[in-house]
Image (cartoon, rainbow, N blue to C red):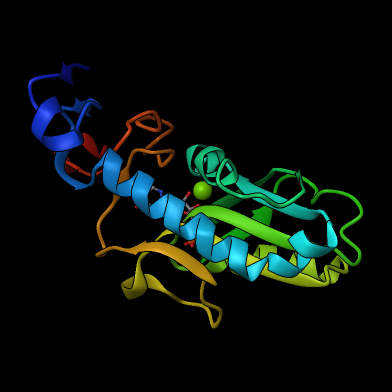
Length: 199
Ligand code: IMP
Ligand code: MG
């Protein structure tokens, strides 16, 4: 593992890049600017909760949305509780289709609350569809989904994210919370992983 500090200035404007990244898709400043915009759009959408001082419940899906959530909430004026969830996703033994399941309980007392689900990426969409369904079943008065990235070429479900930062091509990306085998989450930018780095 080595860090390429020579590329700093042009590519990530102060951040660092890893040798296993073949292309930077979104640099640190581009992400920061879009996250601020997204928060503004979301705040407009949640204006009623703000006006009535009703707390919203933010449900970040771990671990991928850790960095995105940390940045997003610092631009959101709403009163909120945060309850993270973990979702497991695995290929079925006999089918191509991936199975998605909650690995931790949703936060308590969602009855009558506006729930905002936050994820790093809407890929096939099965993860978000599961959380959307669970939050509604738990009695949420409204459910809003927010993702940083979306891969339209891969969507397999009927729902779409209510708020999406960037639409990206069908490539495997890492950084800014997104991982490959648990690594690269700490990269400040989002980049495409070299095929040689995928084992
Ligand atoms: P979905 O259920 O197919 O929408 O998958 C969403 C989850 O898959 C995300 O929360 C990510 O953890 C993971 N994922 C999908 N695409 C990528 C990627 O390009 N890089 C890293 N993780 C990804
Ligand atoms: Mg994830």
